[in-house]
Structures are given as C-alpha cells and as structure tokens.
Image (cartoon, rainbow, N blue to C red; front, side, top):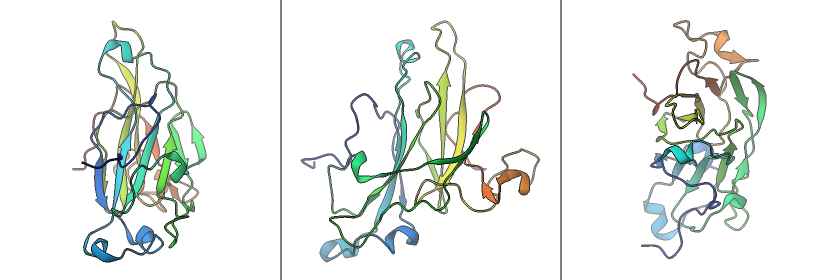
Length: 212
C-alpha cells in the first residue's frame, strides 16, 4: 500500500461513500502534465467523492460544511490536499436550483510542480452531505446529497440532485437533464443557456443517482 494516501482531507469531513472513477476527458489531459515512462501506458482518471456521514442518529445534527471533489489522478502524485484543487463557484441560485461556473479555469498545466489537480464544490446548505456513490456518464458526473431531519425520532429529510462537468465541476452548456420534469430537454432546463447543476428534491432524501 502507498506510504501516503491519494488525498487527505480535513478530519472533520469524513468520506464514507465509495469513490467513483472515470477516464479523464481530453479537456483535462490536453492541459495536464505530460506523462512519461511507465505512466505513458496507463489511462489518467478523475476520482469523484464527497464528504459526510450518516451512520447513526448522532450524525443527523452534524453542522460540518461538506464538499464534493473531482480529483485528477495520473499515477504520479500522492498526498493531495484541498490546496491542490480549485474551488468551484455558484453563479446563480434559488432555494431550489443551483448553477455553477461553466468555464472555471481549474489550473491544469503542463508543469507538474504548478498544476492544479482538480476542483471541489462546497455544499452550501446546513447539514448537507454526500453518503452515496456518484455516477459518471460521458463527461458529466451525477451526485446526490442529503440533508437529514435532525430529530432522532424522524427518518425524513431532503436533499439535492446534481450534475456537473467532470473537468471543472461546473454546469454544462445547454440542457443536460430534465430539470423542470416536463418530459423533455428544453430551455426550461437551463439558466441563460447553461444547464442547472442542482435541483432540490421536493419530498424526501434522494438515494444514489441512476440513469435509466
């Protein structure tokens, strides 16, 4: 096993969901450090995971500000931290919708010493957390978050369904999912031509994302 972990986060933000791995898109590899030697024979990947815990009633009231991460892995570097990543930003939001910066420059460069290694999203709602594995399709990553009711006698809660670009964690251009749930992809699934990245669930906590 490696001497260092691939990524080391803050100990107050536990990672309890299994990470998801997808082949890094060209929009990342065309900018990232050039791989030489044995690394040339491997595929660089993006690793996606979130922080948060909901294993017992005592976890419900946790007020930790959690994250969702997209980290580039070409096999050359261990011991990454949030300092190696770029923070994604909201550009539009309502109580039920979120849009993230479509064209965020993460900072991937050909120089291994100065290149950023990915991005992260700060989950803005109190108690919001990731407890299920993300899903990758094409160049998008789907992940859900939950916000449990804090009462130990209540099994309910709410949450968010999310879809962002693998490369930078931002909203994609054009409609990418049926945000307004009218049965089709149309202008109502975008804000100023940019896809909504997050939709709050009207009832209950969402489970792991699925594409049918």
